[in-house]
View 1 (cartoon, rainbow, N blue to C red):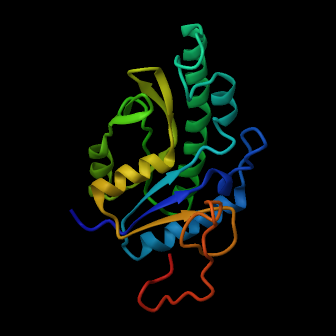
View 2 (cartoon, helix red, strand yellow):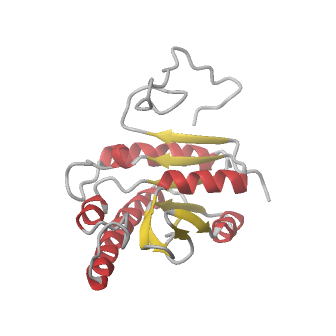
Length: 211
């Protein structure tokens, strides 16, 4: 397999208005698509993973999808409805992100984790990396997203985009993992981490082409 240049994470807050139900930051998404287009034009293979932001968050919270049947003794049909509504919302965002990438000339294909990834007590026990690899090998740019998935211990849970990236990185060893956020600057770690990340005052791109 040819080397994987990078995994790009589009943060939920970067491409959506997180406090406004299913509200897209159109210009931010267009800029992100432009960055991915530049990568693709140089022949650098990449995978896109995006968060849910305001798509899916409200439904998951209302129906307690993240904890499934563990935290509350809920009606099974109620929980199933919550999972379905959450997935309708997150896949809607995945469609919008993938559509914008295609508009920029990128052969992007949406890949949803539900059914292919599984958890047990919120820990991933099955991850279908093969489907992602097949898409890459066929010349496509896979676009994955945070999702609601089945959980053998609590019926369902939330699989975050960050967890997906962690597993893909372990399996595929990309040269870079880049997080596009709603915070200005380039940081060596998430700026909202305890202690905060350090912003780079100077960024050389002679040896490392801009991504």
